[in-house]
Image (cartoon, rainbow, N blue to C red; front, side, top):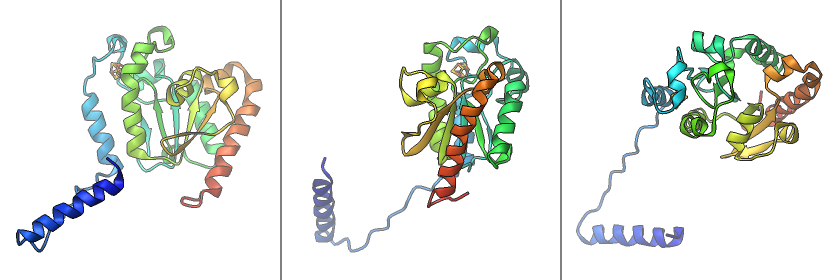
Length: 223
Ligand code: SF4
């Protein structure tokens, strides 16, 4: 229904009520939930999840970690061995590098939010398969909707392709902002790739500098 038509219907309805002698209406808004509560509800919804086959080999569901009010979010593909054991994303060698990248950008790790496309460790650290991504990624989208960060840095092919709904590779995507539901998205290399390919650290840093510059110039939420 078009907005003008909807407005007309509401007006007619209110005039109807007035004709029936109702002079006053009390409008109650549904209470707004905080990001903390929204995240807690998403975690409760996931529960002891067996929705996809990745549940079979996991130790912990790796939900995500960080500030529920974060302006900056990082998204990787899925937990590895260390993350599975500790129940926290990006705690292994790649995670330590990610922490350094965050700090080089001028943030503390606790000030950002870190999550993954899938929440259970794929066996032998293989890439998550399409059915697993399709089953688990809606929870990530709900987390993003709860946090509403200003910028999401997507790390590596799978995270970029999932959030941006594209088949383009990270080499093509990286370094250019895109948009997801009004949120700026910057694709760049995964820290695990940077550990194997140190030459990629410089272009990755250029991508992160663009994020810092964008956040500094953001009129609504300056760094
Ligand atoms: S990966 Fe996601 S959907 Fe699959 S079992 Fe784990 S939490 Fe559930």
